[in-house]
Length: 286
Ligand SMILES: Cc1cc2nc3c(=O)[nH]c(=O)nc-3n(C[C@H](O)[C@H](O)[C@H](O)COP(=O)(O)OP(=O)(O)OC[C@H]3O[C@@H](n4cnc5c(N)ncnc54)[C@H](O)[C@@H]3O)c2cc1C
Image (cartoon, rainbow, N blue to C red):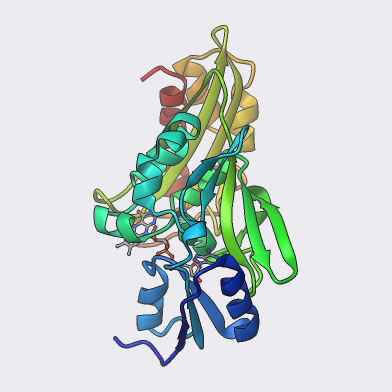
């Protein structure tokens, strides 16, 4: 399959990239790792007139410590994120989930920002950023805008980014003392997309759950926070029975797809089972 004809620019700074996007107008697309965009172009499901390739924009790469948060540059690859010592120490949920994304070849090209801007509900990282209350930083010629994760994922393959906005990076509040995390992913074969996934973080204190965060992958057209589960476990004991009982509410308010891999009911069942497992693991019980 051959993509439709397109123009191509290769900026070397964020400033130049933003100018290119503004000049090209609505028919431009940012090219990051190309792992999702290029297949769509080859199938002619996407046909941008101009590609703005970020490969040479060095300032978009890397992880930095911003005090009470980490900042992950949009062009940092999955492989770099999964192995980064700051990410492992302060945002282990990101490292765990990123290690489950696709295969090594895709992880070496695909980027953290590209995955999130793509806003695929089956992608592993949107639910993770939702659970961690991440903040998305976007630049355009109108200035810099910060978008909370709860507002970033709008619909299937649709983020809150405007066509002329460049995602420069994602700020992740550090998890402090007492937090532990787990990403539970159910997939048909190793290195495949999630049929359902659960991103979970639990803060324990004196044998009880002080706070829990639970977000679901592929249970709707955008990632969903399982607030009913979070409320049910907060203040309660760290026990399998309590986690299983709270997880019964995992599918509440979700609208999962039905496809070749599972019906709506099956995905609801998976959400409950995987949430109980994720809570048990983050709660230190397995
Ligand atoms: C075989 C295969 C298996 C995969 N399995 C998984 C999986 O199990 N789990 C999973 O989560 N993902 C999976 N992926 C997707 C993978 O994570 C991709 O890397 C990711 O979806 C897109 O990242 P990218 O850097 O390649 O972005 P690209 O494909 O370059 O871009 C994707 C979209 O985001 C936009 N975009 C990219 N960067 C920016 C930016 N900085 N600012 C604004 N817009 C931007 C682009 O314009 C485009 O619309 C898989 C991909 C493949 C090919």
